[in-house]
Length: 288
Image 1 (cartoon, rainbow, N blue to C red):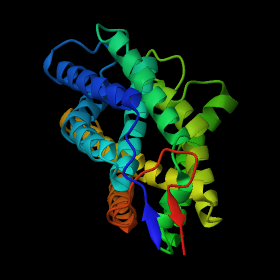
Image 2: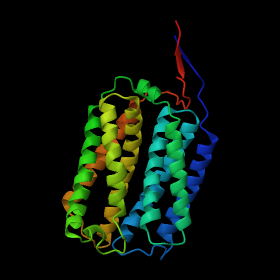
Image 3: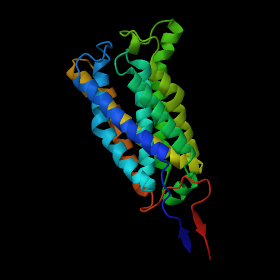
């Protein structure tokens, strides 16, 4: 017979951090979208900022609020989605803190960067990864491994094909040639963090390690949300008269839709009613 503990309470510190994150994100995106002249960046970057603000306000904010509610009630599905959306916001406001020209919201970006970093690292470190593995059971993992591997390879190839020749020639990469940015910030984040994260997650999941399930869930949510943000950026870029190659649009759209489908499949694969455990000891005990 399986004896289940009652749903553990999500740490109050993480709940409060996420609530403050919600409030500050609404402020940052609303001001960015509706206050003219806030962004003092190069014209080529403005459509990307507006597109990301719109996606963050319309999708990420509601997703964070709903997933936080369910995670606080002990839902394992809610906890995984909550971590993934927090990861998306961490990536977003790390890029805003380091990439955007200094403006009146600089301290808000830094606060969001700090809050989401604190929440993601702390909540993942306290997570019982083996419980998620048990809740998914023998669900097939090949498609998730393949998707994450393809994302890692595609990102690495895309950015290295841009920055590699610039490094060899001693010139500026094309993506920042028309800006005052000293370095390509997004490429730095992707090559230094995102590519290794997807590659390691794919390897851990293929090896059926418990943390492979956790990283896969978080990265699927984070990656899908970011992919949708990129599509929103492309829409704003096209509206602003910038050219975006059709193959590039097709690739981002394809990966975003595939990520959305796999994310949904992964979350639904978590056994309904599974409760999250943030205790180091197993939350289920087997008795005869």
